[in-house]
Image 1 (cartoon, rainbow, N blue to C red):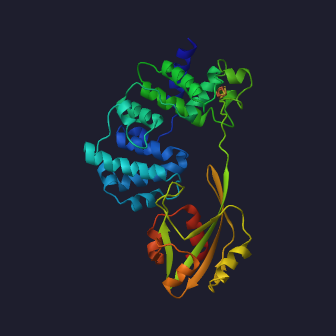
Image 2 (cartoon, rainbow, N blue to C red; image 1 turned 180 degrees about the horizontal axis):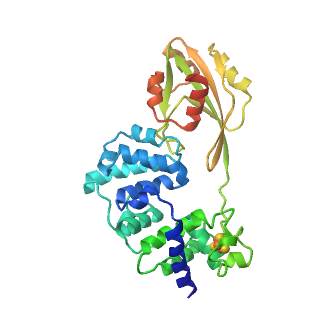
Image 3 (cartoon, protein in one colour; image 1 turned 45 degrees about the vertical axis):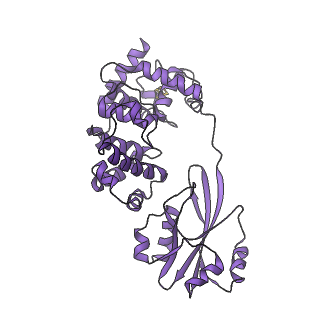
Length: 352
Ligand code: SF4
């Protein structure tokens, strides 16, 4: 009874309060895929211009697949979590070569596409194909935990299972795709993490968290990822009118983006210590930047840039042996995909 009331009232609430968002007007699975990948870890206001840019530049999976990776990363620049863009591009290419650029039609098959997890597969299956499957994101965890009083950990597999069980039980036979949108929207707009609108809430009478004053305790999320602190010293090496840069590789952040040669330190080094390393090479630092503090979800990076002019490209080896670096002029650098940290430095110190 309680469950039925919840679904009916939620659908009414949604019909009045829903936002007009471009991907909601579409049943094109590619548009939904793109919007869901962009909106992971990103607020709607920030993600919307990126979604529009991507749809304009790559209106189909085929056009995305045929674009060079650097161009895709450049368009993604500023959104962070670049593996999302790389996986999106990789999967578009794979879909084009193996399935004529068409996404699979079922939840189970969608899960086989790289970069599509449970949430995104459910969103595409529900919104594009109207498959009856529960879409569970952070908003849904929060709304269910508070209203139905679930105190299981949303980071723990057993806890997650319990949330999915309830989410599936609540799915109505008709309009389940609208219900999925509605519960996420209710969490995003009304039952928000820090300031839920309890006083005007339609579920006040049935809400467990409201009755027991537990809004700030639910949902339970135990495993907090410890933030790492890193210290990046970038060597911004100028040769004539060009700067040495290279593409980041490995399993670290910003794979595929371009940066200056990097010396990473475990501790904050006194800058004299860095300068000393150059003095040994008889190459002097023209300019050193302020310290840039760059905050990512799981790490904080303190970064300093040292601008160094060299007469011969070979002099670079006296500072650091790195054969992957190539010289780029300012025009070329502007076109390369780069992290926001590198961009901030360039705008404050180089492109002025
Ligand atoms: S009463 Fe408060 S905590 Fe409960 S559903 Fe409404 S907004 Fe969320």
